[in-house]
Length: 278
Length: 228
Image (tube, rainbow over all chains, first blue to last red; front, top):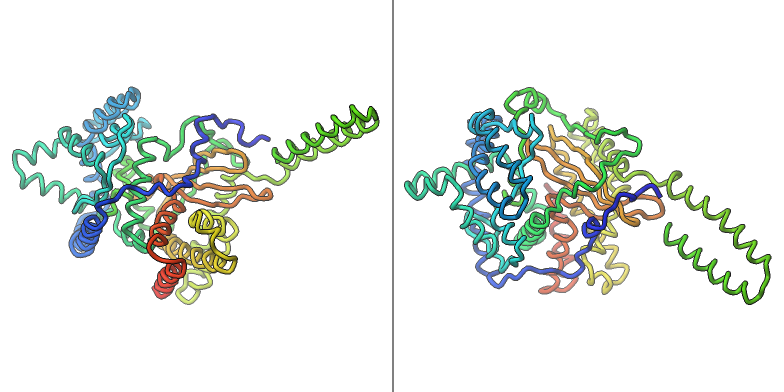
């Protein structure tokens, strides 16, 4: 009975099955579906071609740096929400990340905080904070351009915008604000091209699939269970103490990429594929 | 295994109760003898002999698939079908599509007859293979890290990370141990369970259409995937 000795009671929920349908409240489905197909068309007719052109002109490493830079700008959102959720250690981690990456990491272009200091980002936003406080998700909303959300996360998004430097820029100069938002979208999309197509390929009803994926994704984020708790064992049976690492490097490009110092020092957890599906 | 032991001890207890009435000491002796033999045999089975670690189980699958993808002879255009078949064979050994189908259909599974169930399993399996194996074939430069596992009863979760373009995506495999063999019955990507996601879709479709309608939709989807 060597297996499973280190299971702690709080881990049991991860095996829990969702036997009831837990269907999200979706009275706006007809309108949401219209916006869903609008976003779908927007992706295929605008976002994808533009991102492809951009990806053709701008090297991948540069795009990864741009993403890292923009992500660093939103550090105040993560710091404040970690604090609001009482996660003092994580608040410290995010603050340290912001300080290190803004200085050593050249205004956030690279992520030495993670690679040199082992400080992984702690993704928290106001939607999650409200969820932790016990607010329900409310009805599902599929916003044009912004994609899947719900009442709670929309309130969270508005609240978080007060902590975003991009919003302050947008208030003084709406044109510049929109340009940065659009630029961020194109940059992010250029790094995840094909994901949305794969998602649509796998779904019988893409609208329902995305709605459910968003619900599950946010639920796990609020409960912080997607990556498991630290109390779970780093397990090794026959493979020594090191966690098993398998490289799938099959193209020359990937080898070149890992040799690049920028790419090596930058290694951040970005918005999930779910968030990128619009 | 534990369940079996428990049942056995229970039976022993009942026997014990009887013995008191009968006052037959030799039955007592037999009970001890059987327990003395049975317990070590049981523990041997469960902890050493056949149960392999779920992480190793998945690592082997990944290794096998990578070796197929890296085989240059198989990457030729005219051997693509053969390559896919080899990968399907590995996936079939590791993924329990019947269990996935049962979980994805939930209460609707019971309402179907065996033939309908089989048809559904086969279609659902083909859909998953078409979408996910096709995706694997396009991968390059990704890294898979198996981090940790959690076990409970006959179930396990293996936590892994997929690192792609410096983005780390948590991918968790849920496994069930059947007859000392692990089988994957669900995959969670970024906390989104594949089976739950399909369950919601199937439930939504079945709330508007009948089962034949769902099958027709699956058939259409699968045939489209085969052309591409």
